[in-house]
Image (cartoon, rainbow, N blue to C red):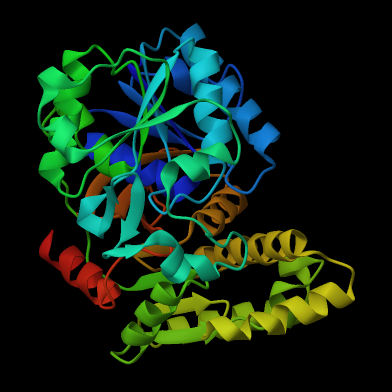
Length: 423
């Protein structure tokens, strides 16, 4: 019976969180899509992570999916719930936190969105990335979901009237003086990993771990706060060529791709005609593109598949899509679907040892194209970079996932070096 159910709004977030338990020897299963009554919730894993695929949904629909997941968990005997949120606060933050509270019957919810290892910190209720307030970072220019605020209570208030209170670092460091005497959402400040541990101890002392929300950063603390049975697991990876698939147009991701290309990775930029094809991977132009990629495989290089080289090239996709009457969401869905189908066909015809995917939507599209319903997180190669196996297809390449905005410029080179060192 699972002890903890983690609810994430996208698949990379689900993997980021699941691996925090797996790397400490706790059996974890990541469910790529939610299905009521799915066997996964009664499987032999102490932690189940479900992807509600709700980041880009309307708030009401997102809340409904979270409520359904919580009800599933309660029916399966789950005793603890963790609502994983994006550390850059994208998605339906307020509505999903409220949904967890309502469905679990909890009137008080601690919320710890900081992820200090990746430069995401919370100070006096404001969210920062690399010491810049959130709305002053690249996430303010996100084409689908631009961030306009950095004050967490204000972001929450966009979607719920539940009262929000801030607990500062000073208060958390004096736990005897903290009173959880009112219902609502408590936003806990944190700027270091030690702050996360102090926050965890505070919640445990006050018996408040049954329902918590936060980033993958706080999830790393949970294995030491809850009573799990742990196993010793040694990870061994085969070095070899990597297929990198990037559906993200985040500036961070694009710089990472350019850095790797300049150091020997081959690269293919998929054209708007291919990615906006209504018949997907069946179109003549797409088939030709796949053949070209397969031919490149013969050069024995790691390969990058990307949608664009520069963020400003987004217009190349928007204009033809809008001419066909598609809105931004429909254009995004079509691009992601085709990216998934193309990747699936490339994997069938090539022999890459590992598949590296940037972005949760792209990852989910590939999982659908390949029929991957469950993932088994194995190891955290770098902060925010997760290695997983596909549970029903052990012949599949090692799956490595990264959220679009995470990581240093040389992240792909570092991943390649790490895989070579873990033989």
